[in-house]
Image (tube, rainbow, N blue to C red; front, top):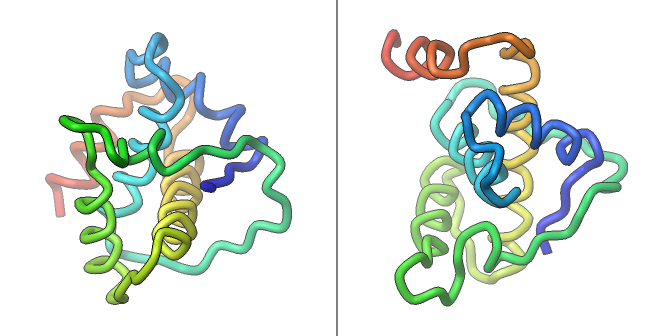
Length: 130
């Protein structure tokens, strides 16, 4: 299981509005958070979370595991292994690492954006001006 915090759950809707994805399932936004984390190399610290009081998500929901045309599990595993310079040998390790990247992505977004920010300008600055 991939766990979230209540803070992450509360941030999903405002972020979905910034992305113009209000009608998409939560996993789309969680996947976006993980992708933000996996796209920004600087400053990956192990973020300590004392309480996972949000929701539990299955790997199938986040990566599309075992879905015929939408299974990105291997892609996420490869990205995490490259980013963290580790080797993932089982599903639990993948879930734990993906959970950490969702938390990191949430932290990056929450600390970088305001409610009226243009997320697309943020992405452009972070990814194309470096």
